[in-house]
Amino acid sequence: MPELPDVETFKRYLDATSLYQRIADVEVRSAYVLKGISGKELARRLKGRRFESTRRHGKHLFARTDGGTWLRLHFGMTGSLRYFKGEEKAPPHTRVLFVFAKDYRLAFDDQRKFGQVGLLEDVDEFLRKRALGPDALEIDLAEFKENLAKHRGAVKSILMNQRLIAGIGNIYADEILFQASIHPATQIACLGDKHINRLFAAMRHVLGKATDYRADVNRMPMSWLLWQRGKGGTCPRCGRELKSSKIGGRTAWFCTHCQKGASSG
Ligand SMILES: [Zn+2]
Image 1 (cartoon, rainbow, N blue to C red):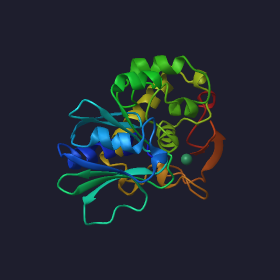
Image 2: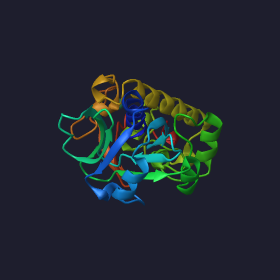
Image 3: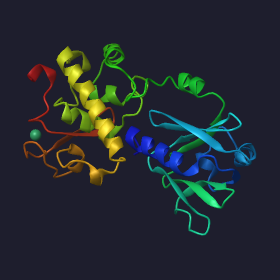
Image 4: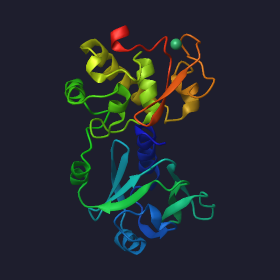
């Protein structure tokens, strides 16, 4: 499921491939992913325009056209982007295809169709309406502490709450908590200042590094948890078998030896 590092990678990919080209056509192959707009209307409003810049907030990506309208992309569970030449085959689960004048194409591919494509006029207004918290790579330590202090619950649920901090999902939440040596079920209220500082540092480190690695797991260090997440996985630090449990409706993977609740360690 695309999280901040994945979406930042899509942003850079779109920047590197698709800016400043005239949009000749927009082909909607599955209107299911369209939000608040018809395929016809999407094509009408984008045809003849160019994408001029992009912006990312949490897991949302926005591309501004020279007409001032923003294309909004959310990648759901399986969304991705692919840029290719007209004669090549489109990716198998292409839902929306942006056809550029020189016959290059940008496909929004999304097997499971939880992704979203829409248009909007004002990104800040959209973020306010969604009540999204600050982006996880932009929030500073003071605001991080303040947002966490306002809430109760397991630290992992808090990290994944997009209204508090935008961009973190299941995989990176587990990684951040592993690297901060904090058990995912720890109640946020039990975390002292030292732990919160460590959590913040781990969040910046993990998301920053994962973005540097272009969200490609194969490039990430073997010392990271994400290689081992799953049944039979072992802790990269101590070698003990990883445990799992449902926290906030999602499966958390962790090492009970290396990750402690604040009270126990
Ligand atoms: Zn361990």
